[in-house]
Image 1 (cartoon, rainbow, N blue to C red):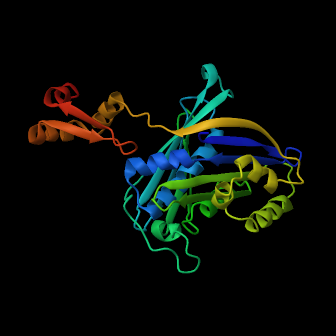
Image 2 (image 1 turned 45 degrees about the horizontal axis):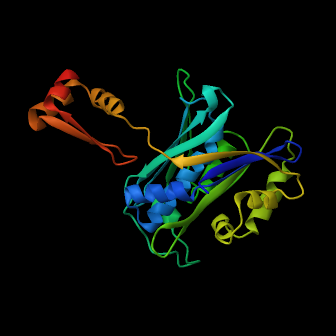
Image 3 (image 1 turned 135 degrees about the vertical axis):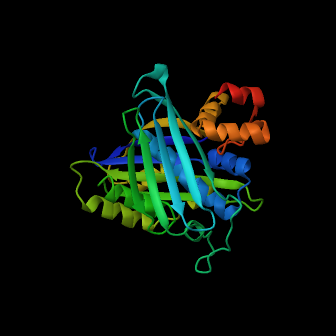
Length: 300
């Protein structure tokens, strides 16, 4: 079975529950970018976060960008999610797509001495987490918070608390296999809705902290439905929506032409004079686009 996002509510509609299995998407990203283990784990967590947050999108043209810009060896990490809807109708969500890249996917660090786990916080470093939500309005919504740990999940939870003023519990995981492929990846996001008692998120966080990691559970055979139902046990969870998701880049020759135009006519003339053509490589999928001298001239 491929990747999917599952969502619903609990606690009489006071709690939104979103979970996603993202193993195939993270594997695809690692394959494209040839990411080292620690970099793959960091990139995979950001990709998973962008998939979970895609529930905020309403239309096919909407985009959500999750950026982590730290001063660690990996540099910046960017993931962009979009949706497809049945007949283009808002609310009829039938697919989620994500793409992403890291500035230095070859970055790697030794396992943490404290627990033997991948040092995602170390490879990310200190910096900022930003969310850009483009819903086709005059200006996109942008929110940014300092990174608390660089472990991504804790940082995203902090973003919801500070920028969105919504208490949330977030957990991500990427399990690297012995052959360096992605064995399991996934995560979940729990959000309090209006009317929820403040103690609810505290109770859920305590329950989550006592559980094995999300990838440990997935690797042991638990489904994301099982995990979410266990977390919300006693609060009558209703997981009513299940949507496929996948890694997919929507780059095109037209978009690359627009990128060339955006650098300005002076820079285009310089490229023409010095290189007599151009090659642009997509950051997200590695696709290369060749532009001849004549094609560049037509852009002036």
